[in-house]
Length: 146
Ligand code: CA2
Image 1 (cartoon, rainbow, N blue to C red):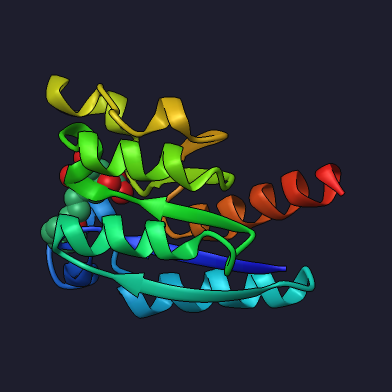
Image 2 (image 1 turned 180 degrees about the vertical axis):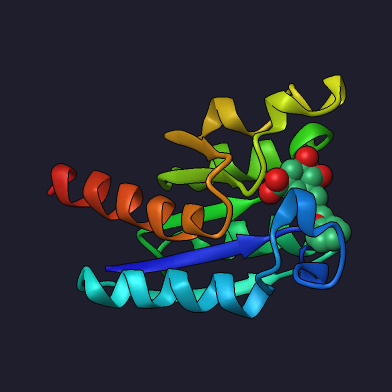
């Protein structure tokens, strides 16, 4: 089972700013936790971060036939991107949307997700641990399908 973890814009700043919202862990910590979780469950996981919407769209498009499922934190593109939504829908892969913070406790513009309706699940508010929980949920979903 091969999984792909995608992180969107500005998530490379994790651990450097806004620790009250995002905690003090780094992007590498999150990617490593997701990889370790996948390995523990008998899967492998590749991780990719980009600030560029088109690169994330391309990564989703190229995932079909290569990966069995995707965990994505689309970051700010969650609330704006029809392109990411269309890419997820077209991939026909199970995709879990992940957020570090609970966006519903924040500004109103973060309460809407363009991408969640085409994902199998949305998980938010668990901080770093969300990266493990999202992988666990995706692996369970894939195992149940087989
Ligand atoms: O809570 C999440 O995971 C978000 O996807 C993070 C996005 C935000 O736009 C979403 O509404 C919720 C922002 C990512 C920016 O990450 C930073 C990390 C550290 C310091 C500054 C930004």
